[in-house]
Every structure is written in C-alpha cells, then in structure tokens.
Image (cartoon, rainbow, N blue to C red; front, side, top):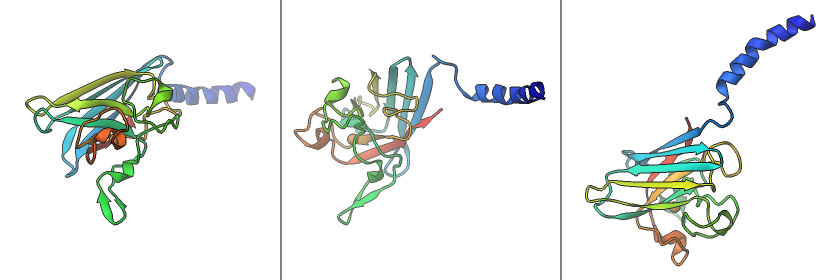
Length: 184
Ligand SMILES: [Cu+2]
C-alpha cells in the first residue's frame, strides 16, 4: 500500500518540477508599452540572474531628441483614472514603486533606502525618435517578493526627469506610455 501511494505521487512531482525553473536560472518578465491611443510604443524586458536584474526598455515614435522620465509604478493596471473630475491618463498605474517607503524620487543609481526602487534611467530619443534605456540593479527583482516587478507597470512620461523632487517626481508631468509587467 505504501509503495503504491509513492508510485502515484511520482508523475505529479515530475509535472510540478517541469513548471518551476531550476534554481539559478534567469527569471524573465516583459511589458508591452502602449501609447494613449493604444498603439505600440515599445517593450520592457526584465532578466534576473542571482540578485541582479537587467532592465532594457526600447521605445520608438517619440519626438526627435526628446527626454522622457521612465519609472516602474506600483499599480497593476494602465486604465485611466479621475482626479477631482479630470481624467488622469494611465492613472490606475498609481505612484512610483517604493517598496522601502522612502518617499523620495532620486533616480536609478542611489542605494535602495535612498529613493523609489522604481526610478529608472530616463529615455533620450535620437533623431529618429527611438530610445533605449538599460539598467542593472539589485533594487528590483523578477522573482516573487516585496521588490518584484511582477504586477507593476512601466510608465513613460511626457517630460524628462531631474532625478530629484524639486518638481514632483522629477518633473515628468503627464503619462504618454504604459505597460503592465508580466512573467514570461
Ligand atoms: Cu513616473
């Protein structure tokens, strides 16, 4: 009887292990970034190996040589919201992802306790309106946990990013692109 129940268990275990990546293998996530009219603007990819996460964001269709704040926001939705009767484009994406509750906008390079983990390098468009931002960070992870990017959203802002709070959230202003991050 004991042997039989063990044998029944074996195929179940094999099935489970097929779904779980081996320890140490990279975990990956992606976001499709759409503009305010629902047209594709670009993609974000997240690859974690060990404690580091490489983030690559590639966008096109921007104004030539323009700068755009780029952040991970806390919400899991790119729906619009309303604030005092006015529409907030992609408002459901919420505020900058700040898992350590620093309440400071300080850009991508400060240590984890000094600013929003979701502050990413701003996008700088070339003459053709294309921009790529790359960041290697330990402030964000792909695997599940308090600093995971899964279920957060990438936002591209109308304006640039001063990496400080002299203007709210670096002065990026309105939201022109959004994509929710999902595992792949
Ligand atoms: Cu933002």
